[in-house]
Image (cartoon, rainbow, N blue to C red; front, side, top):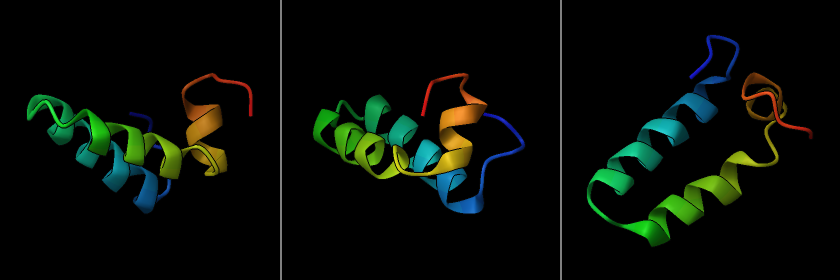
Length: 49
């Protein structure tokens, strides 16, 4: 996780990791969908927007 993420992205990343630990892949997918439109998320991970 990068320090350039907004607070919501950081929260969603934590939620996603907790869901993954709990084998809740539906929630992981939900978090990914919510993270996608955030500009800091796309650039922080080195992904194309």
